[in-house]
Length: 395
Ligand SMILES: [Zn+2]
Image 1 (cartoon, rainbow, N blue to C red):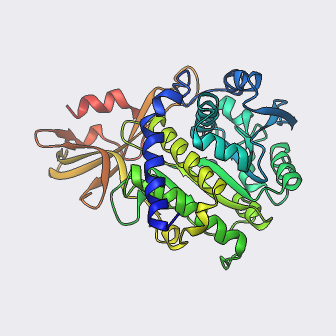
Image 2 (image 1 turned 180 degrees about the vertical axis):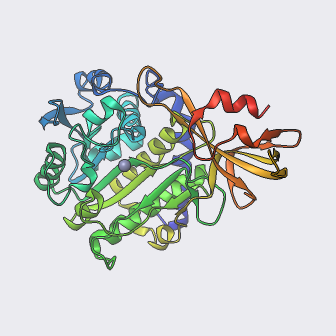
């Protein structure tokens, strides 16, 4: 197949996977907050119908079983691990959708090609204790993605043992990044950021990393087809404590996938869909070895993540001064967070994070501030308040 033809068929594949997504999405997953027991319940029918095989590997610090889920019989092994950070569940949902795709579309060319050529090794939700609390760190309060070097935590030991045992040729390190990051100098949200992690402080390329860059280029191409201009590159500073960097160093061509943000997508359902299409496309391209024809520049030319975005900007609000302070017309930036702890879990809290000329910044929601006047005494910078209270002031 010549190159034009292969990229044409790849773009058709991306479109087909996108168009049919609703049919293979696991519809019972409706929130990004779920526990390991829920995930195990979703995996159970996949195990029963032999879509995946489960092998227990050990226990998390709090005693939850961590299992490896394998599928495919091919000679090339690909390791995919998700949710080392308990509050980063997007790719875990995506892996479940992908298994469902295999279950429902056994005769699909993507399923058949992947299963014949690849052995997929999946470690969904590597930090189940953190997921239970929807927090980044493990039950021992360690960031397990800074434990690749010393391997003090049971979860890190499990990941290292799998890499060591199977020596996979390819790896996908699946995370969520801060949802308000942007692409380069634009105001466009980074829906997904990619990285072929460095293996040393000089960011040297060898065959392993060059392959990872080609794989990242396939992923970037597929995602840019769906959300043009919304794919960024993640910070490539080397950190040997981070698993992506270490796994690359240990000989597995590894790509970090960081799920970012999207307007009105607090539960990351749209970003989950992007993960599914991107991962299925890239796995297919590894299976056919089509990725070998990609140029590393297609990855390298991605703009880095930047920080030009807020949740809400109200443009041109009148800020009324008090006690001798004159009024001023300004833009106001607000970020909104979900509370994490009971009894207020999921309650929305807001923070005014900047005031002034915010023309360089974008927002998920831009509001016209004409007609709104805020009293200086009602606003505190960087202080969290209930979103409902602040919202009333912006009427
Ligand atoms: Zn992470």
